[in-house]
Length: 98
Image (cartoon, rainbow, N blue to C red; front, side, top):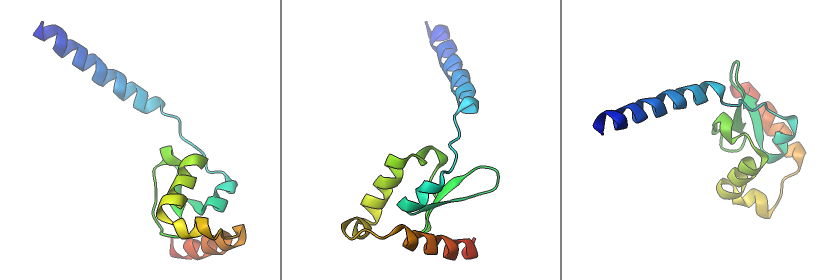
């Protein structure tokens, strides 16, 4: 019984390693700047919030998750929405930093 449990655990670890290699990498879309995010990183796009300069994971590069970050972390931008040009200016400032 213990041998079977050990083998199942080993198999699940091997499957997890295979799945990690197959994980879908999301690409940055230029429309994400309207949520306050730009792409940074070499080789892999990571979203960077231009308001708080926090980088989030590639898995979180979905419009719903970017909106959630904006709503939860920067609620003042939701109550008084900023135009896309504001985020474009912040993008240029952030490029100078990184």
